[in-house]
Image (cartoon, rainbow over all chains, first blue to last red; front, side):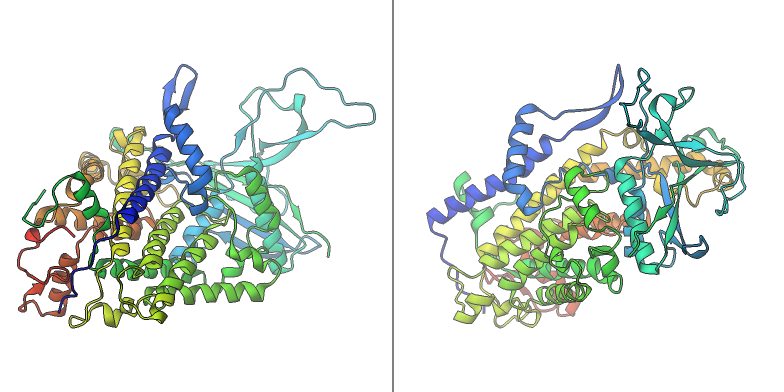
Length: 257
Length: 356
């Protein structure tokens, strides 16, 4: 037997519900409308464009005061829509106090299940992108009794780094971190460095793995490959090898307990 | 739009009918089961490794969290804020308790147990486990959306004219449990809250599909029809000889990939035009698109959450009468005419039933 037809809602409740529906979905629409678009070509290179000002203003107000509390602040411009993603992975080599290797941990772990491996890929992606180092201005002089701050940046190396095995292939570029006073950083080529965020992530990962495995220190090695371009298929020409960049972060020393 | 004698006339009536009509809660109950299973599938694979992914002594420690809250970063799309997991800082036992307790809550919610309570707890669990800077993934946002709409409807369900006992008023209708959901002799009372939540989920889903489609058109690779090329040839697996082996079929491959990609875009932009139509082809397009999207996301992109979300979004657009027809077919009792649970009339043609 079907249930008896329900009584309609009181009018005041319909009005209240309608305000909620319009307000809630309106906040989402304004958030989406106010999102940045692009990247578009500009005379200064590619750049994102701001969303319409009215939508930005209303959207950010509703986002800060309402959607944030519901954790609904995404504007659905998903990063994964950019399908030309690079490959990023890393190894952490754990060592005892004498520098002897205890264990090597690879992320993403090929033996992990699909869901865990996906999260491990996200962990690895925290280690990119590198950021360009701006060319130095005038030479700086340290204050009396002080030393100038040395900036870490990536330096290509040819020789094998001690204690760390390297694949021996010509398509692999090896980078290590070098620290130098700002005006002494090379200017004859583009120079990049690890972003602050990636540095935090790298330290956190090594801290965790050292604690878990009782290691005194560790090396983090990042593997990076650019996406394969469809143009190779279109023009039916491919290079002999696809380049890979292997980057060695500075040795991490676990705090003494 | 299909109209019949029962269709409301005028904007105000149609508005009220769309959002605030008491509807058969079966589709909402099924969405709860699907969402509950998705939440479980999302959280359960971390079993045994929950301390490394969610603990304050895991991949991302206290310092990392503080840094993420101060500066954010490319890996922090989900806004951090409160999380019940922060209570377990320095206490692995409590973290394990919270993790396994959360799984229990999600299972109870999916099973329709005390839904007025477990729906709120489910939202708290989903929000808490997504507040993680190290492994936060933009797909996690979609889970919080599902959890929110599941919470709204279940919290409000049956408060007005629900005919609930005092216990049910406190913990939620017993009719949400699977053995009661499909009981033809004692169908659950129609619910405004269930209808309202389903409508909000449907519209929100349509906004997401359109917004992400428009975003794709801002990217050159999507215009060029080459967006599917990259996940098919991942840099960690593809060698030059792999590519060279395909040179003979290059035109066919590029033609197929670009066509498939533009069909995806057409589906996304077309969704608002066919999502609420209930004849065969629009429904085949809706469900077929959701299914292909799911398979594509897992097989091509190796992304776990988008596919099931897409499918749940598509399924949320099916009406109660359509669900009954599907269930009857699955149960093999199609010989008996399906009756609308609201009107009580037999449903002979899915396209001819009133909107629901």
